[in-house]
Structure formats: C-alpha cells, structure tokens
Length: 139
Image (tube, rainbow, N blue to C red; front, side, top):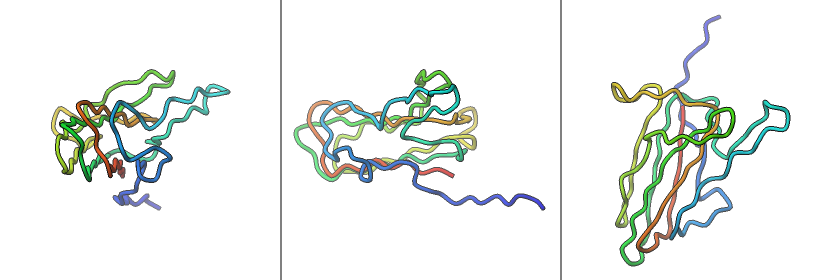
C-alpha cells in the first residue's frame, strides 16, 4: 500500500500556549537545547522531526515607545550547536502581523532541509510589544 501525502498543517509551538509572557521587551527564546542522556534523546521546545515546511506567524496587539521586534527560527545540530535558518521576520515596529515561510519547498535557491530540533528566538529593542503571539506551523 502506498503512503498518502497528507499536507495538513499543525501547530508546532506557540508563545500564547507556552509558560512565557506575551509582553516582550528584550531578547528571549522558546527554550534551550536539552543535552541527551544517552546520545540519542536530545530535545528542544520546537520539534521539527515530522515536518518539511514551516510558517512563522507573529502578531503584535499593542506597543510601548518605538519597539523593533524580530523573530527567527534557529535549528540545532546533533551536538546542540544553534544555526540561524534565514526564516525570520522583518522588524515589526507597529501593531501588525508578520508571516514568513520556509523549508524543503522554499523559494528557488532558498530550500532548507529542517533538522530534528529548533528554537524560536526573538529580540525587541526600543520599547515593548504586548498581546504578542508567535506561532510556528509545520507540515
């Protein structure tokens, strides 16, 4: 029997569903690399094992001062070294939304084979953003 391709998206990680605050005024991330106990059971908050493509969605509900928020998907190799993927939002400076996608089926010359584990990292300078949601979907 042939395996059917099921292009259904699923939520991989959400700021709102995490224990982290939705008000951002500095750098932060979804969580660090968890070193494996036996060499094979590594982990991070962003599980990319079953996805080939991702969409990173960021929304900001309110701002204070003149913030600049950027969100990036980083990935880990098998030793826990972090790599920036290029899947990153432009600077968000007002109440708005941002969407960026990537992965195996990305733009020509920009395809990326996702490893098993990742991390969402953000930087906010010049103020704060509140009512913030960072969501990573994969399929």
